[in-house]
Length: 246
Image 1 (cartoon, rainbow, N blue to C red):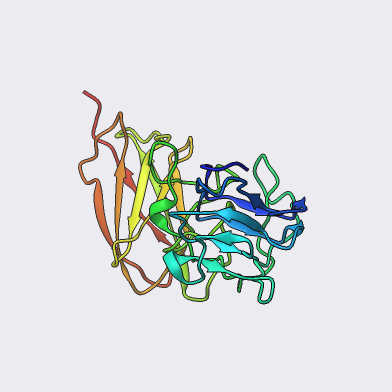
Image 2 (cartoon, rainbow, N blue to C red):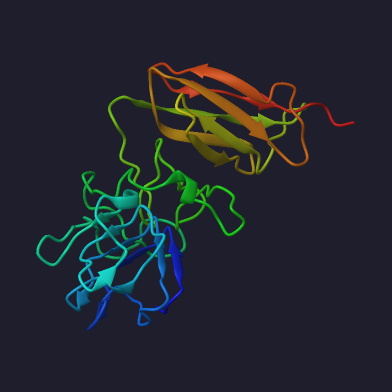
C-alpha cells in the first residue's frame, strides 16, 4: 500500500511479502494512516508494517520494526516488535457468515477485543457502522466498545442479556430500516436497524444498568421515540409504534 493511504476498521493478516509484509509505505516523506485496524500474523518480511505512519489510533500491530509513528500504548495502539510480537489470536480466513470470508478471533482473550474506538467505527459519510465486514445480522459494536479490525466478536458474557423488540406502524405492520440507538450510562451508543418485519435486537447487553433506547425513521414519527430501560436478568422486549399516517 502506498504513502498517504488511510485504512480503517480492517484486518490485514496472513499475507506474504519480503518487506512490510502487511503494510509497506515506501515514501518516508508522506505518512500513511491506520485506524481501528489489525496488521499482524503476516509473513515473509521481518515486520508487519514498514515506513512512516501518522495520526494512527487504536490499532493492533504484530511487529512494527522498520516503521515510525506507531507506539505501543499511545493513541490506544497495541504494538509489538520482532523481539516481543503481539499475537492477535486470529483464525485462518474462513466462512464466518456474510458474503465474504473473514478472520474470526480464535480466543476471547485477544487484545483486539473491545480495544477499538467507537468514534472511528463510521462509514465514508461519518455515520456509525451498524455491521462488521459480514453485513446484515452481524453487529459492529457488540457490547460497549468496538473491536479492532473488520470482525466483531460475539462471545456472550455471564452477566448479559438481549434487548429486542419490534417497530410497527399504527396498524401493526413492521417498519423496515428503522434506526434504533441503545445508549448506556457512560454515553456509549450501540446501533441496530429493524429487519423487513420490523424486528431488531441487541445481543449481550450488560444487566443491572439503565439504558436509553431511541428510534428514528425518515418516513415515520413516533409518539414516544425515547424510552428508559432498567435492564434486569431476563430478555427485555421493547417495542415502538409509529403515529398514524396523515
